[in-house]
Amino acid sequence: MDVSYIILLFLIGVIGSIISGMVGIGGSIIKYPMLLYIPALLGFVSFTAQEVSAINAVQVFFATLVGMFAFRKGGYINRALVITMGGAMIIGSFIGGYGSKFLENATINLVYAMIALIAAIMIFLPKKTNEEINFNEIVFNKTLAAAAAFVIGGFSGIVGAAGGFITIPVMLVLLKIPTRVAIASSFAITFISSIGSTAGKLLGGHMLLIPSLIMVIASLVATPLGVKISKKMKTKSLQWVLATLILATVVNIWWGILPF
Image (tube, rainbow, N blue to C red; front, side, top):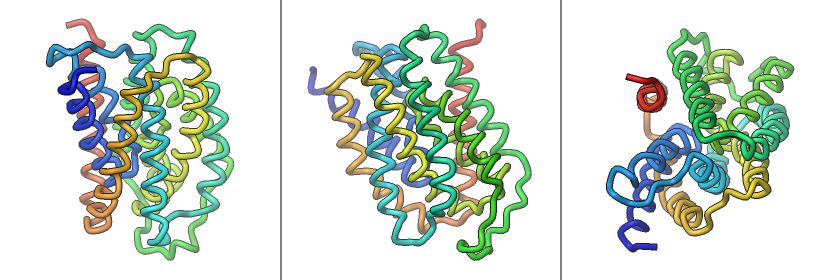
């Protein structure tokens, strides 16, 4: 593999991992379109949607693992939320990750565009979350949380995204979880989910070793930096960063899908 290509992939991984550390989304919402479009735009060999989703699955596994440990010290991770949603998501993500082998590249892109659009709509819905609540006093609907997580896991497993970018809007809007708890818990939930989606991708036979390793190294280097930035930012600023990223990705993906 060309050195310049390795550097490009590493930079994509670093940018996505810093952002994932800031807003708890695993980085896939950024890296999916970047890996899909940037190499081809610069004259390198392009990845297929199947390959990008497999690379993302491995990268998200390590990015969320690093982010989870970085956030653990702050006491923001809600164990009950992680167990409820993580358990349901790992089942759904394995089904989606393995089932993606039977789908066309265009279908995978469409699934990604749909869940990104739903996330964008949800992030702009009004929220009645009490940001000042004691984190040990958080109560949520476990049935709703598990059902939503299973569905998210299935669709995100298809694109190798682990679902962080839609899990957070679901926690904020439907479950009324405080922003910092949602972001921190999302790392643990998406880490569990990524186990299922990565296993599914491996069994599906679409894994690319070298690009995946480059993304993993970038995640280990850059995700802790993103977490440090996140802890210093105001809650409203984090919400706007997340909303802007999701909206930009939605526009980009749908621009490539719709016939103009």
